[in-house]
Structure formats: structure tokens, C-alpha cells
Image 1 (cartoon, helix red, strand yellow):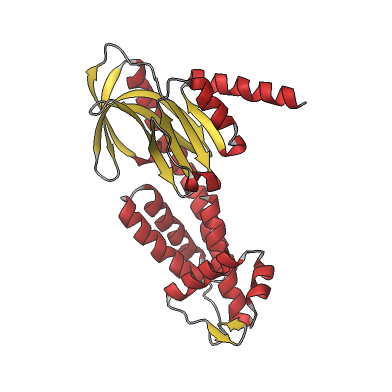
Image 2 (cartoon, rainbow, N blue to C red):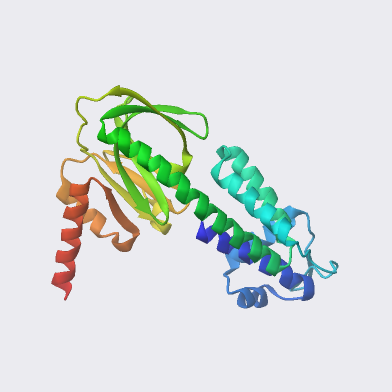
Length: 287
């Protein structure tokens, strides 16, 4: 989320800059500390809102607009709540539509109003998510300890009958690992997507994880090609979670070690410990 906010912030700063100046692409990039691809992305977003950016020779401007909008404290609070609503409560398709609409209104605000709205959104999200996460985690942990299969409903309305396995915390988010009982494969869900938890039947035995689950970041997540016995269990633009069912763990871990800080093993706990020891041994050899 942080990266998305930085990107949106570049749009509002660029729009405000063009309102009072006539500048070249290089001057705009230097003033905002952005690269040329980001310049074109910001320019497209400004045009998508419905504003015409004038270009005369090498110079860009939006000088025909006299001023940006200064939103009131109540209005920035409403924007913050709408962003939280889109992020946390709505199905994914409606989520994107509402977020896009709110950001379009914020693009034409002055920078103070924009930052105020996003600060309120972050505070609101943190407070409500903390309470929601705590309640869901306690409930999932309770049924996991009691060895119950669960029926989980997510925001899209899809249901899973599953066997709980474990939790993972990463960058302020909590992920829930489980066995999908219908296909007997392990999957992962962000806690925030779960809207309903219903216990089903008692489990006599919870199978131990045979797959290694690892996470890739940044550019590697975008270009990674799945190897034999691998499948994707969660993904977003700069993050990829993969389950590997290879029997030769040593070969797998040596390959993952080459990815350096762009890779992290999430599950099983035994695999995490083995991988940590390999990293420590590698560092000892370097020193």
C-alpha cells in the first residue's frame, strides 16, 4: 500500500506543479524526483480525470486552471472513510471503482488536503484492522486448536471448506494458511478478505505440510517462471507466493538462496529454520 500511496502522491504533486508552472519533462522529473516512466503514468492519470494538460514545444502546463480545491476537514474525513470502505469491505471489482473515483477527486485538491485525507485513512485503517484482525485470529486459532474443519466465506462470496494450518504476519498484514479440503491443496488468504467463519466437523488428524511455501518480491515477482512442482497461491503486482512440492529440499533452498533479499520462506516452520541456518552459514563463509 505504501508504494501505491507514493505513486498517487506523485500525481497530485505533478498536477499542482503544472497548475502554476510551464516545465519540460526533465524539469518535472527533477522537481518531483521521479523517472520518465512515472512521469508518463502521472500524466495519463491526470488526463483520465478529465483535465487537459497543454504542451507547447517541450513545455507542459495546466495554467488555464486558476486554483486547486481546498477541501474541508469534514470532506477529507469522508474521503478517508470511502478509501477504507473500498479497501476493506467491498468486493474487489467495486473496490477498484470506488478507489479510482476517490483518488480522482483528490487529484484536484491542494496538497495539504490530499495529505490530510490519506493520513486520516491510514489511521482509520490501522485502528479498525487491529480490532478486526484480533477477533478473526482468535476465532481461527480457537477452531484450529480444537481441530475443526471450517467453512470460510470471503468478500467475493466464494466459500471454502478447509483445514486450518498456520498464520503469517508480513508488513502489517496477517495471512491465513489452510488446506482446501475439496482439492487437497494448501492455499493462503489475507485475513482481511475473510468475512465469515463457521465450524464444520472435527478433524481426526491434520496433515503435515509437505510443500515449501515461499514469497518473492519486486521485479523478481513479475518475471518469475514457475518451476516443476510449483504453483501460485497468492499474487499482487510486487509480490508472489508460491508452493513448491519438490522432494529435494536442499536443491530448492540453494536456488532460493540465490534470490537474496527478494525471497523469503514462509512455511513450513521447519523449512524456515533450515533456510535461516543456510543463510547464516553462507554469511559465516563470506566473513
